[in-house]
Amino acid sequence: MMINVQTVAVIGSGTMGAGIAEVAASHGHQVLLYDISAEALTRAIDGIHARLNSRVTRGKLTL
Image (cartoon, rainbow, N blue to C red):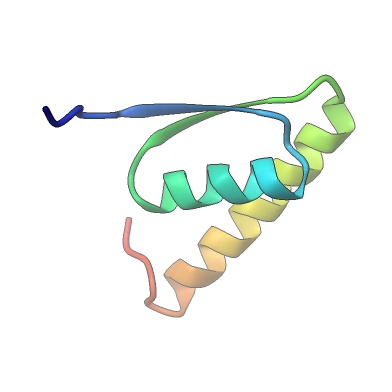
């Protein structure tokens, strides 16, 4: 049976968590990213946005 996943929740926004969130977002999923540290979460979100925007600019990813 195939499951249609639309939202992905990631606990922890370190290197691995941010990477998982980025891959899920780049494949069109809504992503909920959680971390105990607001600073770590902000860093991860800023990095994900920058990398995804770069891929859009280079034509490697479409919105």
